[in-house]
Amino acid sequence: MHVFQQHASQSVAARSGQRGHPADAACAVGFDEEAQVCHRTQGPFQPDVARARLGVASVQLRVGALLFHDEHVDPELHQVMEGHRVQVTEQVVVDGCHAGDASPVGFARPALAFDDGPVGIAELSSGIRLCHEAFGNPLDPVVLLMHGLGSQLLLWEEGFCEGLASEGFRVVRYDHRDSGCSTVLEEGSAYTLSDQVADAVGLLDHLGASDAHVVGMSMGGMIAQTFAMEHPGRCRSMVSMASNTGNRDFGRPSGTALEAMMAPAPADPAAAVEKELSDRRIWASIWHDDDHARAVFAAYAARSVQPRHAFDRQVAAVLAHGSREDRLATITVPTRVIHGTVDTLIAASGGERTAAVIPGADLVMVEGWGHDMAPGAWPQLIDAIVTHCHRADGAA
Image 1 (cartoon, rainbow, N blue to C red):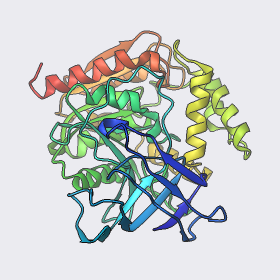
Image 2 (cartoon, rainbow, N blue to C red; image 1 turned 30 degrees about the vertical axis):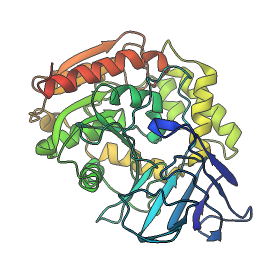
Image 3 (cartoon, rainbow, N blue to C red; image 1 turned 180 degrees about the vertical axis):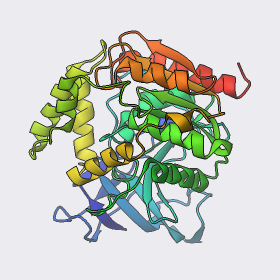
Image 4 (cartoon, one colour; image 1 turned 45 degrees about the vertical axis):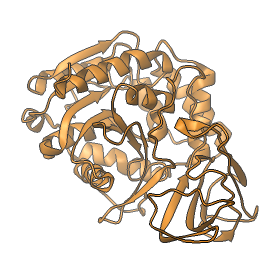
């Protein structure tokens, strides 16, 4: 086994019994403490149960062969068995780019037994690599979660994803290009929301999904809107959360919020977390909790730090389209708009305008919700999403 990318951890261990794995599932990974980013290093991989989940701070492992103490291996792998050695004929990427999310203990419903294991990397024909993770039964309709500007898939915490999955959905969260553990482009690159939509379509192709309910927050809402405009045949329904239409007369941030969002983060990781926390307080929900938010930002920093040029490219992609209202008026898929009453980063008028422009869209205003994913808001947000998706599928 070779470690080909390292960000933080020097040794890691499995979290036993996660999402349907047996309670005695255990494995450990170790590697040279001198390993550097993009340098290969040898390290032991010792699983006791096939497909045990790796609880890793920030590591990607490319596995060519696995050695087990017995012959209990994943039957879905294309493999050649020689005694207790499993030679994988097509190399598998085991992506454990993050440890547990900051979901409050006890919130998430009981884990489902249909999890497909470690985080995956989708290699798109465009050359973009998308890091993604799925929750729930593979046979259920897909809900594709799109995070916002400067964020990563950890925005959609495990408890939130499991709450959606328990209602009968295959929930997929992923990092956009220039985010998290997905491809970070070179300086001087440029793209649009349409390019980000093409990434999402490519991810669905990779997953073998014909279509999905697309759910996006903030910039993710703009990508979801564009997805519904450009690929209605792949879109079962659309949910735009805490977003706007690109019309600058609606959904304007407060001056304080805009200044905070655009200010560069300190180079020191601890200082950067404190800046994120200070910013969050400006546009937070009434359910905001400093300790929880700090844990989320620390998980972001441990997993992947977004370069400033990548953040700026995402901003440019949002601005490149200008107002999308003429095209939004052509959307035909079932649409729900969700917005918070205390959002100061994208004011409530952004959601109100979005619902007014898209034919047949309904608007759910969440009292006390800001521009965050505070767990206190999860029950209302999950209910709003699930109700809409089931209705679009004819189940409500």
